[in-house]
Image (cartoon, rainbow, N blue to C red):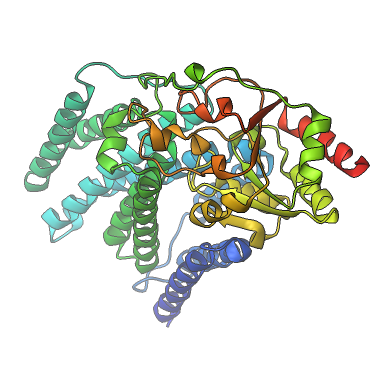
Length: 462
């Protein structure tokens, strides 16, 4: 009887995962979808702990609940304290922990293969889970370090060739272990080479490609978790892993499409890294012009339509709430205000959507890139807040630029462009932005939060 109830629990959990994932596709339902999926996971966890499987109950409850308690406390504290700017690296860290869990499962279960009848099949799953989980863990930790600035891009001549050799050697040892499972020392060599490959795999990839890398590593973790589901014949673990793997893969493809780059170029191109060449087209275009706060407020107040382009600078300044205040102040004056969201703005997919949702910005005002580009021609003023590479016209008209061909927000089509930045320093991709030197562009320097607060005051007074 208990086994049937456990199966029902797993079925409920699997359904909640699918429903939750579907709801995550829209900002209005994302929070509720996350809670639904979490509830399903809770049902699966407690069902596994308290209900028998094949007539056998779990034991060592003190270890189980000790681990759950420690993990819950650490996870809650980290999630409560994390800033919106640090959300991408937290996602990378949590994703890496998932890969580490999958790798540890493979190591533990390798010691139990003598109990299996179909040893080769079991070892194959163990090896796949170990390699994919280890690569995901090591790569995610490097991505975490890059996103918080503690790890710099690193590459050397022949690194891609070395990576390929290391990958083929790892896969070759894995294949050898499948047919010779008594060579137990190979499992530890595979672990080390997989971890090394994970580090070398991510190290040369530049900052501008990090959203793609995060999505790819996320899919790796899902596949590794699915391998664990195969090992334990656990339907909910298998379903969850497949969903994460498939979603991560699709998101990776969408991110590559959004940047007009193939996955191969992302992995070997070092785009946005230290090796990326800096475009000089902007500095050759002439001097930039500044605009005062009062003039910027006047231009915004008397516009019919304003588009706001949020970027990482907005997140760094934690200025999403005061940005919403500016939006409301302009709306009160009869100005139509919308937000233009680039799919790879920030440090991970959906970063800007989450940021603005936290400030209770209406979802109807958030326009995706294609819709926003259709409206720029009828826009009086575009206010760029900390965005850089996603509005760089070099992506359209400079074949020598590393971002050439990447779809951008075509803000230069608007009548006026006001760009708020701390300085003229290049963006995350490390290249100059020609937009800043165009005649219709005005620079408004300063911390985004302070500038927006002053703009709100000026707008209300005008």
